[in-house]
Length: 309
Image (cartoon, rainbow, N blue to C red):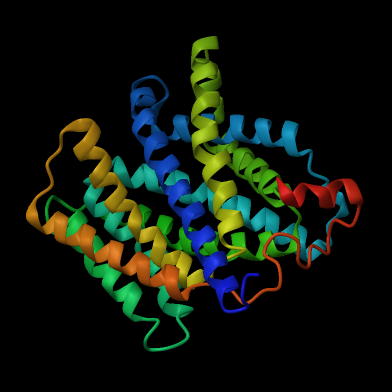
């Protein structure tokens, strides 16, 4: 029999594994997306992923937003808006800033959530350690700084912070991936208004097929994993764990691209891994059942059954 004390650790560990899976999918999706920049541009790639991701989720999940209470529906819509803003603003920042600088600025979002929701002085140790690691990994002091690029990166950071908070709130209220299907559809509509018309004219069957694969990598699989992870982890722990993403990027670059990291990058990897381990150890949420608790808004049996997806 699993002891009561062991249950939170198990929940935190599974949530951590989901977060790591999400970050790995995002890094792979970003690496593969760069090959399409010449055809549709960065914002066009964002639109392609979000639009096809929405189609996949609508077909598989078949959400019923009209059954949600108005506050929960508003939260879903807000989540979709910040998701679109997060992805588009970061792509715009990367077009104007070195990737390291843009990444370091964007990570202020989850770090801000980790610090704001830390709850105790000891809990602040992990975000502080992760922040030091991110700075060492990305060394933002190198390269030129565009005011517009900085503004876009800070906007992406703010959207990322809102995304973490809203994802947890929606995941706690709506069964399974119902909330994700609604929010990604909203995000796709926002992206369509911004860049969709310019991309539709250059679509080809091959581009659509590639887009389906990218949509699975980002946003369908990772955002779904993050929603389930946030049912198991505190927002502080999750925000700290997101700082492992630069470490994953360095590892992928070394293994697949032969990019040998410098000594301060290796130190940064060590810092963020230590922060991630600390967040996993102390970051479990005290909820009765992370999968099925308090899914009040979708009461029908067939919809509630999606919580095990």
